[in-house]
Length: 636
Image 1: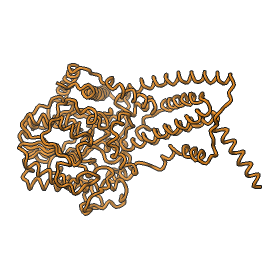
Image 2: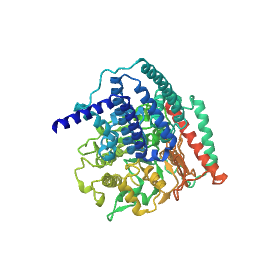
Image 3: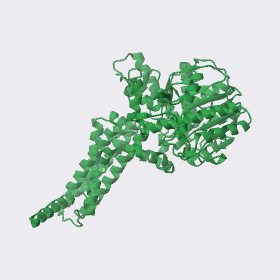
Image 4: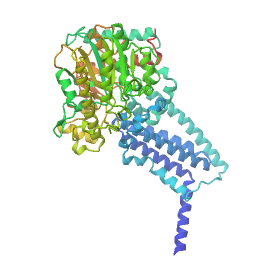
């Protein structure tokens, strides 16, 4: 009986090895990779909504040509290459999936230049990974286990007659030709939507996107439409003239109202708008920020410019241009000349400063703000008391207290850009010495990523209250303009606990509501002499510099944003999203009031022209901005 079992085991082992060392193993892995890729498309929300049957067919065509090339290799090489390709593609899909959960975007090879900042994602990994994503590696784990147990062996030699060799060569040549033909087609398709990664993936598959991305990174200057300063200024002036005719009038008349008044621009880490004026278990999540906003100017539709980093928010605010994705504006293009907000204030006699509770190497900030000519660059090593660090950054409370001490000693008027960090992902508040400063009970959300987020925001609000109190004690509050805003989202778009929280107050939540919630950040503004009011029109970070130029009668220079008090009713993101007062564009047009998709064939000619106008203006803004950054076109 034992001998029979042994014979059957040996027979099964021989069958497995025969399959493993045949071209059928490579074909089987090809089919598995196709299924993994389809799983990737389905597991990434915005891509799932974008893809169609052509995306699937393109994926099959690409992977089939890859497998055909592999099948022409000698036996040992074929097995090894098949396994290596399986591992590499699985890692690529998993990485894209993970990063998409983190930032609603797929990876770019250019982001390899930012590996030193990878801890932002690494800290979040435990909350991003889902059990079902083992699918990307389950076949690899099985193969490695079989190889390690010596059940599988890769044969060194394979007898192939002349006819088979000729057939293999022909198949190999055809596969190579098809591979390069598919690659060329993919690159051309991807370049039809240079700013929208989801559409690039839809048209050219995830593999075509990455091939085009590598090519574009190598030849990045070809992405710029304008190559001379004269050309870009001509396009810019034409665009701004159209805006002046369309939106020239202001809704409110405040020209020069803040001239010679102190200015504080406060960027709050990961503060989304949905927590403002909301309670959990009977307590306000952000009581101090609520009070500030409700007493002053509430900006209820402030949107971020990039599904990316804190540095991108700073870049948009400082330059009124769209950021190159994922901090590239600060890491690669920081030596460029921009018409920045600090120069604008300095020209009006202001003392300028930038403050952040991290070291100057992070996001290259020390070099960036030196290039902007900031008078006082106050980073972590500039502060005397660094005894409390949260998430590796100087705690917001210590940052604010010492910031006010520094502001007291600056020549007046001053402008200070302050960046908080305690509510940074992964929202654990690691390092906070006194947890009683978090005074909300998140209840059923305890020990979830969302629950941690609410607690972090609540602490950030506590520290903000300390900041306001310190400003009042120093007699700096009443006569100072203060703008606050979140830098970017904190919670991924479809976080289940967050959606549960949102539906408690809006049971009819639409997918459009969810997407807008993801990109909407909290914001409010205090202007001495202006009482409580609410700005509900779409506003973005690009609008901040032109707004301050309006308030102090300064020169906004080259600014793609517009004064937030005028009538311009739409904003854009650097990935071809558009938000208007009534509509939202995300590859298709949707109505904001009910979330329904707009059929362009069924609407009036006037409405169609309106939407086309928004889209064309968005393309012009992005083309101008990327050209300025890539070719340094504002250099004097």
